Length: 330
Image (cartoon, rainbow, N blue to C red):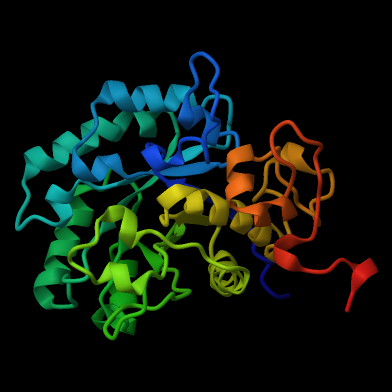
């Protein structure tokens, strides 16, 4: 008898961070009720958010405990946390740096809200023996958690790199980044759990312009064909893993939220399961829909109306990303 088929991967799609001034009135309502909480609001749409403020400084344990409380209304909700840049980008780190980060995110782990931590290395981090040692030291130091590793330079695109991550029990974080001569393309490589995919956008001109700020570099909206392209890679990863995390980092003016919502539905269809969408959104998992969408986001990106109705409108379930339904085929 052949091996039993692998159960469908548990897919979570979300965004990197939630504190962006340019999301006001687009992602978040123009008129907010008393006590409006952007994190709790996003947890009504997504099952995961990547913490990016942890890259700039370790959070306090009190702060991370607060994050866990604010998403209690979504039992499936999880975080991933980018590791402090002192560990990934500085010349060296020590036990005090590691302890500060570990203690800061520990409440998320204790509340079962932390999927993994992410070591994000810059493009200048090349595939060398010294880099291998640095990787091993960083992963060993974070052995309290599952670890994912984002590499950007094309020198890492070798079987020995994936074997290294496999030996270190670290998950490879695949990326879609602006095309460049020595950059890594999106790869369906899975080395450990969870499979992880990040979308940075493809704004090549701003990405390589030293005068561009953060908003300019991540100002990009994936179109329907590009989403189908990356979703195909993600689906291949999901087929070889029990978990898949997808994070949209093209944050400017809510473009990450737009693309993440689209991918949430698209991956639900490609994977043939309903867990990638909010359970209450549709009784038919073969035709996933989303809850009422942010009105400002639908106004800014009307293609979202293919997924559902704006807040305050009737729920709809329309063809995804411009596909025709069977009653109107060309």
